[in-house]
Image (cartoon, rainbow, N blue to C red; front, side, top):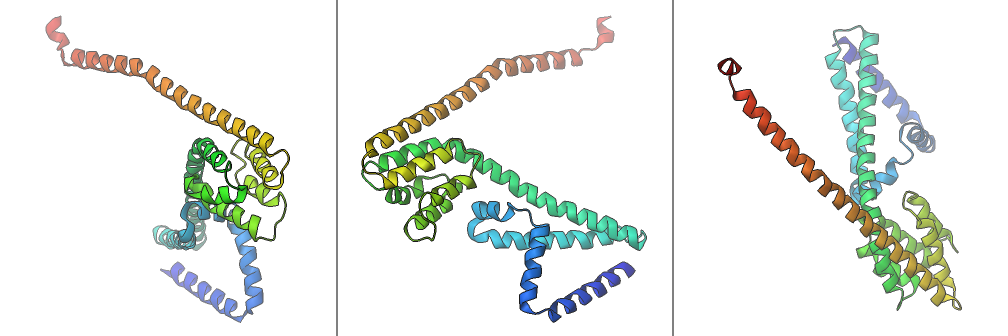
Length: 259
C-alpha cells in the first residue's frame, strides 16, 4: 500500500503544477505530449472507423491504460518500490500499444474490403458522370462508396466547392490518404482533368471508363480465383476426414485380441 500512497502524492503534485500553468502553455504541452505518445495515424484511423465516437475511443484508451497501471501496482506490490513501478509502467505501456494495434488491424481489414469494393464504386461513378459534373457525381456517389471513403469524399466535394484548396490539390489529398489503393492517384488526377476540361472530355471519359472496366474485371477475376482455391481444398479436406475416421476405427480395436 505504501507505493499507492506515493503514486497518489505524485499525482496531486502533478495536478497542482498543471493548474499553475496558464492556458496557452497548457495547450502547447498537450500538443507536445500528443506528438510524443500518440501514433501519427491513430486519430486518422479512429475517425474512419468510429466517426462521432472517435473521442470516446481515445478517452477509453487512456482509462484502460491508467487502470492497467494501478492493477499492475496491486499485482506487484510485494516487490520493491522500483520494481513495482517498473513492472506497472511496462505493463500499462503494453496495454496502451495493444489498443493501437487492435485499431490498426481493424482499419486494415476495412481498407482491404474497401479495395475490393472500389472498382464497382468507380464504375458507378463513371455512369453518374455521363450526365453530371464531377463534383455533383461525387456527391451523389457517397452512399455507394466504400464505408471507409465516405467522409473523405464529403471533404473532397466541400473542398472543390468552398474550401481553401484549389486546383488538383483536393484530389491529390484524397489519394494521399489511401496510398494502398492501386491507381487511386491516377484516378483522382483523371477526375480533376474531367472537372476542368471541355474539349477532350469524351476522350478522358472513355479512358476513365476503360480503367473502371479493367479494375472491375480484375476484381471479378480475383474473386473467382479465390473461389477456385477454396474448391481445390475440398478434396484434401475430404481425404483428411476419411483418414481421421480410419484412425478412429483402428484406435478402438484391441490389438491384444488380434494377436
